[in-house]
Length: 462
Image 1 (cartoon, one colour):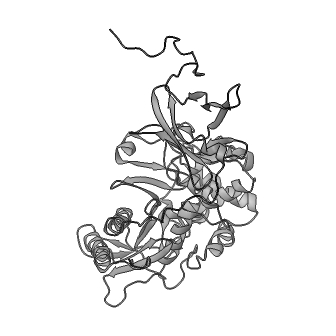
Image 2 (cartoon, rainbow, N blue to C red):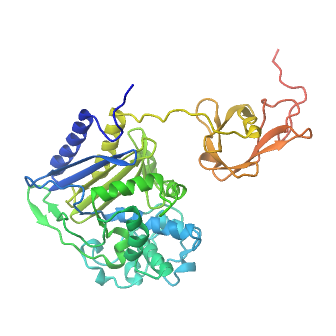
Image 3 (cartoon, rainbow, N blue to C red):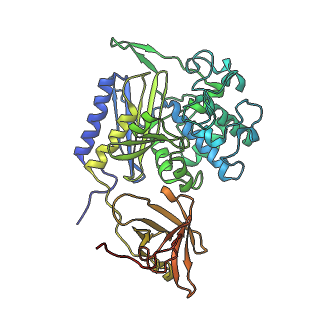
């Protein structure tokens, strides 16, 4: 049986994608809108709509991407961590003293939980030159905090200015120079830059009550650049989306980008209701039944959205050149949904393991935590999973450590140690997981259950 090549989308799918961006551009009254869809690590669709006949933007036309810049900045910080130059738990003061905000950890700055103000004091920083804020003190103001450090999620642009300054301090080079050499060039993002490079779209404000335009000015954000300076293209951002989903050892490992995608900030009640969270420089959303990660962005004249469904191996980018209008992040999520529903991902063929550790194979199967039935399964990467036999519950993946133990990677048991404990006869007696005992029978006679097991065993009631 033949299948459609992975790089091709069906005609009906392509038309549905075009309809979605056409509706977004028309209803959002955007001078132009460009979009791309990525599947299986490759760009499989590109589309655009424009108010100027014959001038539809292609994948090489730059738009300003605003706060999507923060994800690039976060990548640089994670690189510093992976090189051992800092720890995410380090207070900023350790590496960048004298800011007045040094109590916050680097992780808290990345996750917007440092308690800092949302914006810089003084005139609206997005529409004024960065020369008005020549020093960090000008960006932070006399009272940089709005909340206690670490207590709540509060989106902060000055927080990413501090991260940019941290990068410059530890690298001894300007933020954009570091970004270009360590991220943009290795990933082939040649059309991403701090300043616009032709061809690029012009930024426009659209009158809320009339179909007329006003050009938006372009400002160099100065110290605020790590929070929102970048210009990019749908083509470059499509390649960046592949990296954020899979990692690239030239820049960041798959494990580190997975860490960026993991919620790291406590969500406000309305965010819980909306299904949104924030990781390390990445937004996390629950949209139409699937988890999406990425980031949105806006600056006067431009809006941007990048959304990735790792499970579906799909991503979408949407860029428009208007100050407000189409909800581009929602449109990107819709593009992912359209392809996922019309052309569900075809699983890779099942294949048996090439080799297996028999001592680990003996651990596979049912285990009981009290009366809760769990199953331990071997995974193709040499690890194991442990989760309820049925329904919802505490389910985690575990990485083999090579010494007969496993470390939890996600879920309730993330970071916890799983080990098989032998009895006096040398056979495995039980599993120990963070002090929880899992046995082969529920409260079996003589089982090493903390608190003991009633010696009379199970019984009925007369």
